[in-house]
Length: 435
Ligand SMILES: *[C@@H]1O[C@H](CO)[C@@H](O)[C@H](O)[C@H]1NC(C)=O
Ligand SMILES: *[C@@H]1O[C@H](CO)[C@@H](O)[C@H](O)[C@H]1NC(C)=O
Ligand SMILES: *[C@@H]1O[C@H](CO)[C@@H](O)[C@H](O)[C@H]1NC(C)=O
Ligand SMILES: *[C@@H]1O[C@H](CO)[C@@H](O)[C@H](O)[C@H]1NC(C)=O
Image 1 (tube, rainbow, N blue to C red):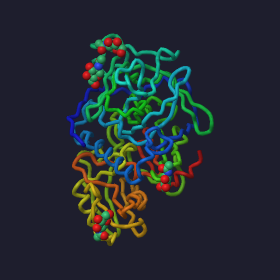
Image 2: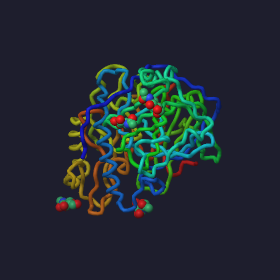
Image 3: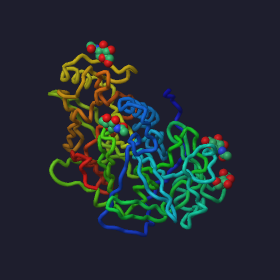
Image 4: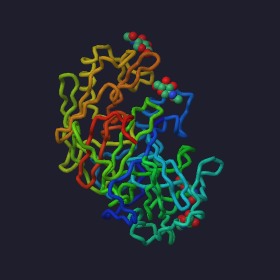
């Protein structure tokens, strides 16, 4: 089921400084709604499955995703694009073009490219997927192969003709290809207004892997690379964005994503940790120093090189993946604290306990560098009891890239500041965040 493909890395990135030719500038930032892919509001929603089944499916997607990540300790080469985009978990709506055509795209902090399925579309034949038609937009412009933005995406584009024909590969071998172009993007903001940004470079995908879900319109990369949505929003948002994910089970609430000054979190309970790694790399690396549970403090090995992290924060992975050695210690500490005999799920993947509620389960604290202690309540760290009475830990061991996934981030306001180079967290009831 989970296959291990070699990494197909096609995209060579020249490290360019931020560019932005955005013509609108705003001072206060803006908020948009995001929905979970398994929420009843999502086209991916399947009413025939149970919440526990949806969780295990999401967990399976996380594993696919983590296995396709390249090692964080591999040389920091000029190569991009790592994950399987179909596995990311949240969707955001915006419109592309003039007149604006609404699209609902997967958001992904683990990759950079923004792309959409475009007419004519080779892989869409016989599928009922929504498509953009560049012929019907007055603001659609193809980039030439020699333009700086085209070269930043694919230095060899001019070997493939005068247009900026791109192929962007993901870690599992899936890809999108088409013409790297520019368009106007328009966001519906939660205050009832709109925010438009012009001249955003995006992939008009004419030939995308057939493995992509029918419902996938496209993807918005929220990584740190120069052509991600975040970088292209540039001065409009000052390198700041945030999200507050409503817990998975609260299936009728939408979550909020904020940009610019709206993304700044203040007040009691805010903790911050330095953002590490190269500015133009994709991932949001941080340093995890310890994990504690009950009275036991587990030490996490420091990063292999100075200026790098030992874990990255990802909005698109459901599970949290921990260094295998630390995981064994965590398991022991949990067994002591939970006071129930450990078992596994039927798939023998997770550490579980026979329990009909999460009452009495311990909190687990992640201590990030800079005294940023995140107390994970049982709601963040364990699944809801399944119908047959199993409560499972949402963390797994890895020998690859450790990831701080999205279940543990639920009910935290998570705020990224790429200029100040930090990530901040504040415990928050996300369903109560005013829209
Ligand atoms: C470049 O893209 C255009 C439009 O998709 C296509 O017609 C053309 O054949 C492509 N050229 C190459 C060399 O792939
Ligand atoms: C579409 O992309 C696939 C790779 O994903 C490639 O094998 C195929 O030749 C492409 N089709 C066309 C018509 O370019
Ligand atoms: C929403 O979640 C509740 C509680 O988990 C569940 O009982 C209900 O069936 C869910 N509704 C839908 C439409 O999935
Ligand atoms: C725990 O629950 C599983 C099924 O959910 C069951 O097969 C097993 O016997 C239970 N174990 C104990 C010790 O109750």
